[in-house]
Image 1 (cartoon, one colour):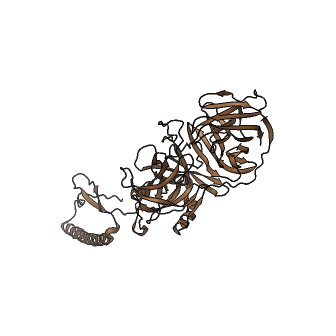
Image 2 (cartoon, one colour; image 1 turned 90 degrees about the horizontal axis):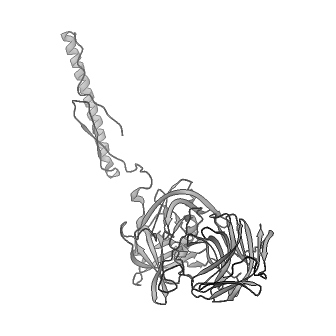
Image 3 (cartoon, one colour; image 1 turned 90 degrees about the vertical axis):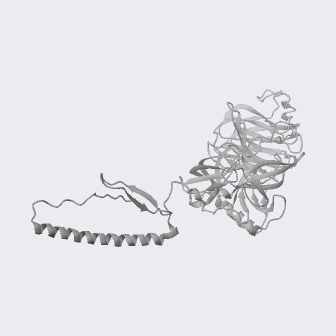
Length: 533
């Protein structure tokens, strides 16, 4: 904005001049004044014509008061404000919050259909295609079989979302934790015509163009902090690579993203979608668990530590770049349906390094815990070490009392008392002060996963993946490598899961067993070997 200054009157003429001089000067001054007034009117008229010609391209004029010197009046100068004047950060009218939806998974239980969990999603086309996380729309043995997916629309910033539609999965990849779903029916099961939906949707941006420090806005429906759509701001704080997905497998952000935002929207300062918040991301030291015990999964009438951890709580701070989701969106829009259940790559992996500890469990005094209570059983028996879990949805672990940093642990394991879906595995970097640790696990029914237990909650670093490398019943030789930030799980020298995390650099080592829908599971271990890579 330019500034103007005005004087209250013309300067007085000099004293001591003759009569003719006075009139000459007076006429000269008057002539100059007439010329100036003419120029001013001409310029002003042109200015008014230009202002009138701008029409709707500019905002309404803003009156700016210019204060004159003492004894003069105040002049009001109208200065139009152009539409393209930038504001700090993302413009409010560009925040596409109406394109964000809440996705509710209705699951089948013994009592009938119930709400199991929820996550967020983003409408990316007016005819109802939605990007979200695979774990938001996937059935699992812990949390139940999905009966239907309900899409709740954002109707206002200060109101809960309204359930309006049902959707079906078109594309899903558990390795990337990306899914595309499409609205197909209204809430009551009546088919909808996609061409008539005309839904609010978000424009797509270029995730490869992001640089360190670029501002980001995250929008979704958190499981903590209320029932309305929530916005948080942050910036790009880094990138994480994975061999199969390149240098930008994850975008790390400084934004604090509450769980439930999984599958939601991350936009750049132009309001374009550039990423999807995901619980499987590697976000560094400030990443917390993305699950909560919200539902009475074991149906004992109480929601407590014996219930399964629903993956909707805590905090996450990693995004899958939009670029990785685009092929799935294109395939879905072409009508293709493809479900990738996270099959492990199953490459060969053989443990190596110098042996620093080994135990064949023939000596009952070799250092492992022995004890029994209403929930657990741990003991040596017939040259093996047994871990028994009595309740449903429960984990029993034990550690050796030996702190290590980088290790490769191998052990023979099998279901001593099977239930059909029990889990067992190796723990590393156990923190004695807090009880936190990494778990590398296989199950009787052929699944594997890597997770982090921290502050009483779980974060999947590698989600459940079915693997043909795991023998029927789950019996086999488990190898767990915890080397730097690289976590790796193999069965019978075949890789079944892999993850990256740097929360802890060292800690104790041990074993664990877990139950899901059925208790009374016992796992047996033998030939435990620890190597320094």
